[in-house]
Length: 161
Image 1 (cartoon, one colour):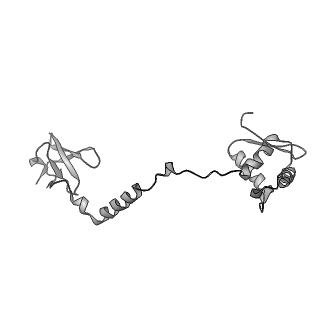
Image 2 (cartoon, helix red, strand yellow):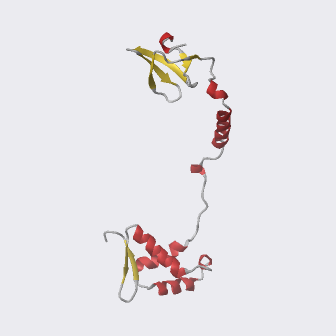
Image 3 (cartoon, helix red, strand yellow):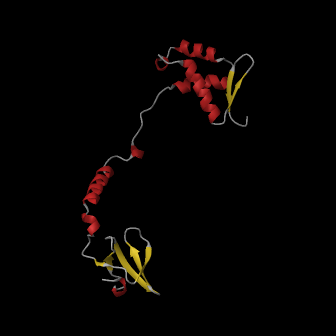
């Protein structure tokens, strides 16, 4: 059937199987409302429409669509990401290094010695000097100032201070 012989307010299937409702006839166009995209679509009066049978369209019987629907229903039954509680991290290497960088009264080597004296399990087997330099680089990339004095003492300050 052609769109020009459709009845306003009735549901039909477009040529690709999408459920549409005829909204109005305007000039030489027929305005359809797509049930999928929720948009009005102007089509010519010679646009082919198919009869809408019940609540299922040919798209619902597509095997690929059935696979996608099955996958989506299994995903929706899983716990949403936002409700998953993360485990507390405890003390991190960054939380140990940062106070020394903010104080600004130690060199990198002195910071390494101070951290090693604390004998924390998180620092075992770590190259502390590399981690300290990495923290300095991370702060400089965020716009913070990394200052080194003449006697090589390192200080990280917030931007604008």
